[in-house]
Length: 157
Image 1: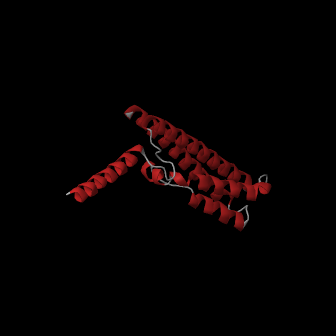
Image 2: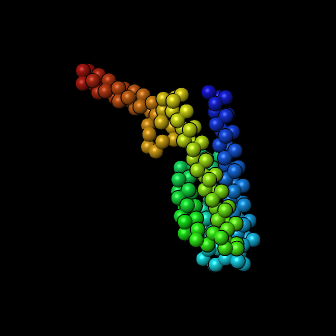
Image 3: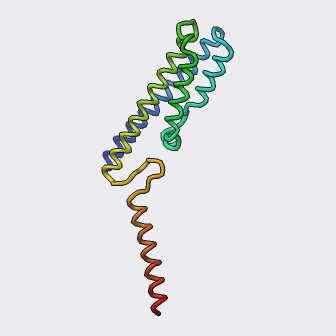
């Protein structure tokens, strides 16, 4: 399992780096296009950059549940401004936004695969919404059994 853990951690770190690179490229493209695009486009594009995670691996792991939201917001931005895609300034920013969306979807796929592998190996539902792990169920059952025995013994004695 440690080798698998290192493999998946390394893979996720790689995806985090790619998201960060795509985010930086998007921010840079906005700087270059700022004089050629509408103020609203500039505002929307800057808001997208601010939304996307700018984090280390550890910080990113805290926000991994937000990736579907980041994907959704990136897609909404692209759809909203796609008609301007061939105009000077807009095309580069939209290309970078598409790259961010692609990296986010790729990262989501890697996280989903990691969850499945961990779930298969451990029998738990690690990382799935409100899933309860096998260890939690066993602990809860032990507590219930303990209190049941205490109640029975107190009734008998």
